[in-house]
Amino acid sequence: EPFLKLTATGTMLRLSFLTLSVLTVAGLAQNANQPDPCERKHRVAEDVTYCDRYWECVARNPQLYDCPNGLVFVGRNRGIAEGCDYPWRGPYCEKKQLANPPIKTEHCDWLYGIFGHETSCTRYWTCWNGTATEQFCIGGLLYNEDTHSCDWPQNVRGCQKHPLCKDDPNANVPLGKSCERYWACQGGYPRLQRCPATLVFDKQTRRCVNPPTVDCDVPSTTPHPDVVEDERVRQGPIVSRPQRRRPAATPINEPVQDDAPFVSDNNLNPSQPRPLPALPQGGGFRQAPIPGAIPLN
Figure 1 (cartoon, helix red, strand yellow):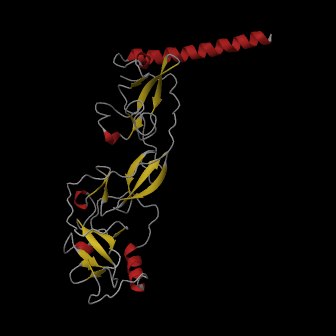
Figure 2 (cartoon, rainbow, N blue to C red):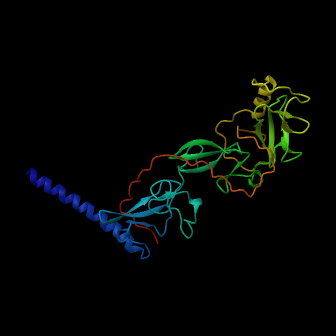
Figure 3 (cartoon, rainbow, N blue to C red):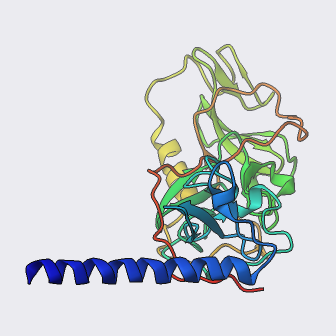
């Protein structure tokens, strides 16, 4: 009797597996243009209708998989997770559509992706499985939501010129009573800079020079209290859970603060390649197959 029960159970499992196989094969047959992954060398095939799905040959049967939410299929052993990558990295969705709607979390429009900051032009979010990590553009660059890169200020929509740089978009501006730090305007956006060791900022020539100057003697290692207060006031209050940043009607009062090397010439060439923003990091994983999935024509 136990043997009969085991045999019956095994028969049911075989029937279930056979049903799933028939459904998946029927799905391929319904669309004559759909490649069979089991006939391919790498046992993987893109879905001809949806760019965020792909087929994989499992136990000699084609099975349909979804890419992680926000990613699209780009090919086996490619992309950032299980053959899937960001849709803006290539024409992967031309003449195709998305099968799955966005799943939103805090700061993330999709579970996976790179998104602009809600209030800052120099920051952005990298989202991995719905968890957002704040990133920064350095070197006077701003995050460009159109190109998904840290870009030159003049190329970024919605980030107007800063009041500190209204007179000259590429000028150096004194920072309060500080002798070592100053604002370096690049493309109309200020970047907090520090003069190299032993040099001081000359407010008349707007350059880092050897001391003494009219206002400064030997550089001090302790910041002046007025400088600390000036930086704190310029930063402004922290806003919690704002909406996604949109093009601003008025200039955004947000200085950039980083400790990048001193740039003696602010007239940088905007034709230089844009540095790509930091990409989210995480372990790859496999989405569960879609049982009995039939791709639509």
